[in-house]
Image (spheres, rainbow, N blue to C red):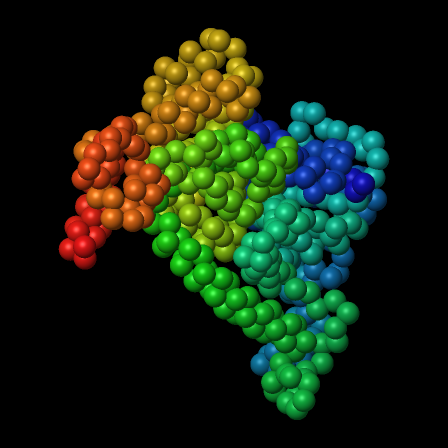
Length: 473
């Protein structure tokens, strides 16, 4: 098992609680990858700028965990190409390189150190195989850090994309993750092991003056375009299936990753969906009818979980998956009420849904895992969120109550009406049973008299079918 040391940067706008909460979440992400966290280091900084993000002292302290020398090697000095040097004939190449080195040196200390060391500085207990930063790193920062530490360095987005890559199961999810991975990789491609000669035209595929690095980037752009075309074709299929369900009532479970959505999905539908105490265990949208099946039938969908600092490319890539929430009749905001940070997690959920335009969809807040709360905590939550529904997926009574609340919600806009269905109008009674709740039924020589509860739209449609059947008779 790989050993990892985590690094957190505390900016002026970040409280101690926010810092520790974010690091705890990163630790869970890293554990999901199968790594063992052996240590954490934090530093207060004025910004995330600078060639190595952390200060010189903290960099050397971090190097103790990795066996590195704690200094950025000359690879951080960026040489100008010979072609670029032609534009400055008055300066020799050595002088230009020295100025570049000075620029890098300034960049390394660009951010002000607000606190050089933390109150609880950990001493290395074992050497780490990888260093993981709780932030996004620029390509040059990654390069400088790996040079100083001598080990692989990963940022938060890199961790999340790797988890998504491992957990994607359907073709659509794999395409979405691959697009996000390539978009993340493009600016981070290095020319290691590639000569810096220039390529000409010919059968090699390079254009005139195109470097190996530029060729790699062009190939990635072409691949992304190809993947997007494949995803668009699948998206059209999903759109067709979704349009067929437009007439059916649907409930989408949305919320932070590991809030218990899949457990609730399984309990409400009786389906075998993946349940795991891991972040992003579910990436693919699963749709099942509520069980026992209701009249009208209600479809429930489980969607990909959200997380703080979710990479924008992943949100964009999974837009087709999140569109399930956009087309839902009702959203259930599922949160882990036993998690002290669930309020900020709820805000993340709302923010991501806002990015896909689902803010106007009606919603119900479900405070999950209430079995982990004390009685006074439940009372306080009910006062703070009077319209929320407290739930434990382990309680049959809670699940039955939630089912009735969902049914009553959709029945608020329904009306009760008696419909006479002639015996010769074949198939209509079956459609009534699938789309409406039948409150009572009687039979006489004219046909079946059904007292139903349904939406005005469905009533109008059924009456139109009965009228057509009578005209044909």
